[in-house]
Image (tube, rainbow, N blue to C red; front, side, top):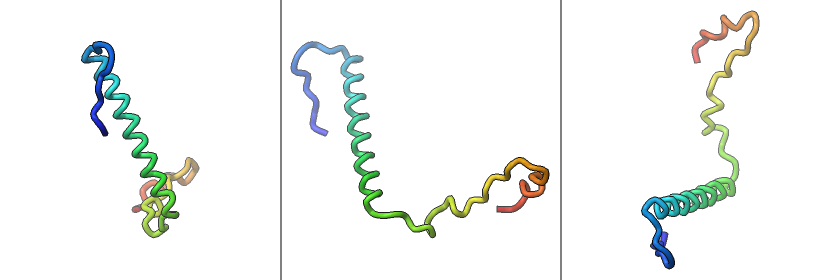
Length: 73
């Protein structure tokens, strides 16, 4: 990021810090959006690498939920 210069006025340190925080947040958001677009363009992830696939589903309320709540994952 190029250096930021104050061209007019005398901002207080708090005002300058606020502006810098906003500019930094916008730059980080733009970079994250570019990274997400790059990952989305590379195609779908392999189901073999999907960690959510290995998770055991949460037992739903019912008369036999106590049996499945203790099953090993």
